[in-house]
Image (tube, rainbow, N blue to C red):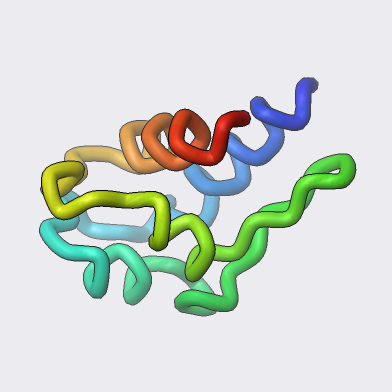
Length: 79
């Protein structure tokens, strides 16, 4: 599994209990198991939910699925 695939899977897993749609950055952080401190790691890549949140724009919301959240974060992070 590539680093990108591993991080993607970790984001989706972290949001498995979230209720969608998620309409705001605050709702997204609240849906993460450890809030902004939730961390995904693979290889030499380490990404916290707080860092990932800085990559998002107001126009990205609402998110309809964990898959969509992971796709946007990975694209913006350049992974």
